[in-house]
Length: 238
Image 1 (cartoon, one colour):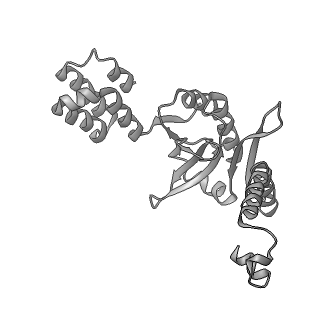
Image 2 (image 1 turned 45 degrees about the vertical axis):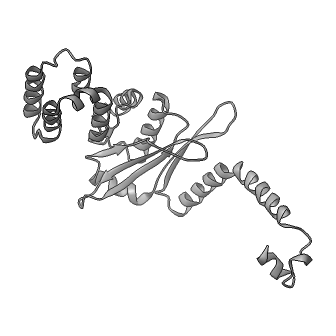
Image 3 (image 1 turned 60 degrees about the horizontal axis):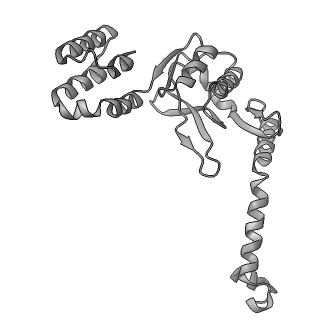
């Protein structure tokens, strides 16, 4: 109101409207923008692609409403870097936007300096198999059908199915932090009650340097602590 008053000679009484009118106008503008934000985003992507033909984006459109439900995009610089850094790729959907509660899914790699690099981004309507398959298919198109060597995700059945369908030659690995979070959730009482087992459990997961060492240590742990019949440990091992 102070700025608007300056435009009218420095006196707010000469403006012709009050603070409430300005607030109402602002709310109306926000509501109008809320219905146009997806259109504006797609227009922005079209401009980016016109400026840089290597910029890639894809939309998933609802057949009934013709509304854009999902977005995927990746820039040209990232597409050029991908062949060098596709050996270890992370796909995460634990982020959500505040306004629409849509999962935001960055696809991330690691360069030679152990720095993370974004290899693609997606906004998704849900976390179902067909949605994940769509993202992976668009990513594959953008990356000239070059498969990632290893793809790391959380323990999600929908992701697991989509990865096996779209990336049959890729090794799917579960994120270590998610495995351990699940362990605390499922084995919390055992780990709290028995500190010796807790130490052996985490040493097996974190300090095994080879497949053989892990398998041997895991079986020894089950035998030693007599937990072979526990239903969560076989699922976790699998």
